Image 1 (cartoon, rainbow, N blue to C red):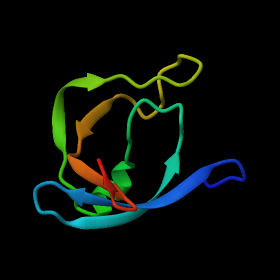
Image 2 (cartoon, rainbow, N blue to C red):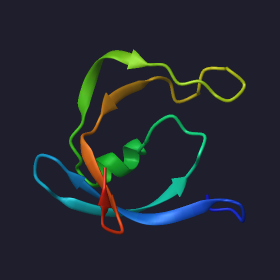
Image 3 (tube, helix red, strand yellow):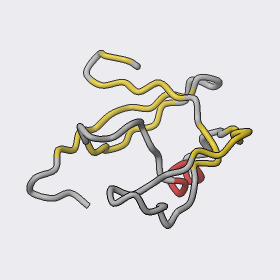
Length: 86
C-alpha cells in the first residue's frame, strides 16, 4: 500500500512475445534485489510465465522464509518509464 514515505511511479510492461503493453503502478525500493510481480496481476493480464527448473528461495529481512514460498515462475517483460526501457 502507498505510504507517506514510499515512492510509486506508473510504468508500462511489454511482453516480449506478443508485444502487448500493460500499465501499472510500481513501488521504487532501493533495497530490493530484483523486480517482482504479483501472481494475481499476472493472471488477470494473461502475462505468460515459465516455470523455473530450480525454485529461488525468498527470505524476509529477518532471514526467515517468506510465507509466499519460493519464486517458481518467471515472466519475460520489458519495463518502460519515460522513454527508458529495461
